[in-house]
Image (cartoon, rainbow, N blue to C red):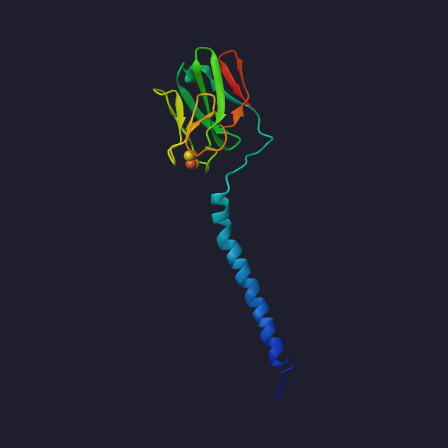
Length: 144
Ligand code: FES
């Protein structure tokens, strides 16, 4: 008859450590998708400029696009003047909407309002929308 070489308390500790390790791995595996959903993508800093056809942004109108993996918007508040902004609200990160009739951005989540240049007009947003560099090149608008 073979003897048990590991005393019971040590075997119990070993099993508890193994179960804890497996439980920890399962918790990380289950929590990773939730973490990625809650944390916005910072984007790839090595990405270049975004080119947008000038005809897509008529005076008073806006054009939404992705810049470095995040929502952004370019608009022409007055003829020949182009403004590019992050479209991510600085309160809790909702995507703002352009309201052409009011000349303002509205955040649908908590009613935050921003002016055409991204300044906070009203509501809970603590900071203006991030301004993005914009340059005109022929019939193209270059953002970034
Ligand atoms: S997320 Fe925009 S006002 Fe709250």
